Length: 447
Image 1 (cartoon, rainbow, N blue to C red):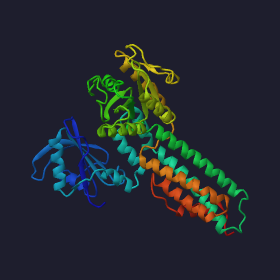
Image 2 (cartoon, one colour; image 1 turned 135 degrees about the horizontal axis):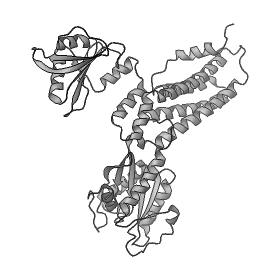
Image 3 (cartoon, one colour; image 1 turned 60 degrees about the vertical axis):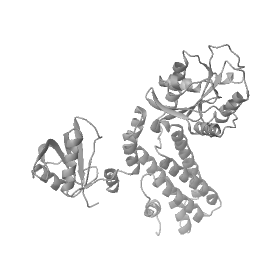
Image 4 (cartoon, one colour; image 1 turned 45 degrees about the vertical axis):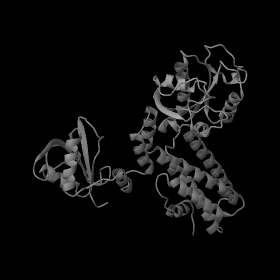
């Protein structure tokens, strides 16, 4: 990291202020050349005139110097706060590069902050997600993670696993010493607690993942039930083609809307039925996949047509996913003569929709479910990488239980070190010297 990097830190476009950030050993020297000044106070705003390499005026800007290691990257950082727009900022950046800096790679400032020990991987991921946050709830969760909430969970879990490994190592290597008789029993109890805690975190994170990524809602039903007209009603414009011809929608259509403080991705699926049409069959397969990927499913039935095999297929899908997904069952076209026997769907308390009220009713139902899903202050894993790491740790802990009970402590410690590596990968690689620290810190050995 000896080279000096630079980039425009603000979004492209017209604005009142733009920021050019420079980080590295030569940052201050470059600032002195551009401003023709030689004296700066760390963390003070300096009004400076900026010049290019030909001594031509660029702009009058605010310069702030962050002296190493008290900066985001732990390196020398200089920020130029200039007038907004693209031209001035790009000219400053060009001059900085002319004086020896190079253009930063995507995410390089944050990578240097991680390598310099300013932040760990949990905080780095939170920064990246916060930039793309799609709701107020997401911003709050990510702000907590930037303050070290997930890091604390990882450190606590790692500490518990290290203690268990240390106990096992002591039992193996120092069996002749005076060790607690109930050690194995205590370790088994600790592993069960760890499993329960991990399962709770993973379950909560998967259930509430939409807080970060945006919740996904799939509209399902047989052909011509009114899925596309519902999508149009929710969007308040004619996004999907509406026709009396069954199978008009042959592929999934996805659009985004905001409901309350939540970003919601609405997926209008192809009608689910038996079809010999190759294209339509692909669309139906994608519809089922959309259900599996969704957080909420809106299952629609047509009140103006008799119950048939296609309705039965939708009912089977509801029953299949009702314990995994939030379900909204809707009876559409209730303003037409009623032909549908609703006995099979009445247990799901279906909403009764008409041409006039369908959008409002569905939005209200979605708001209630989104509010319920957003509730809770539990820790949230914000990426697939974090969830998979915690799952690997849980699997390794589960595999360690059998050799613990049979006294095969070498195999037990092997599985637990796998768990430690997995959980530690969320924030930083593990140092197995910590195991030795635990061994000699918890026991009076070699007395």
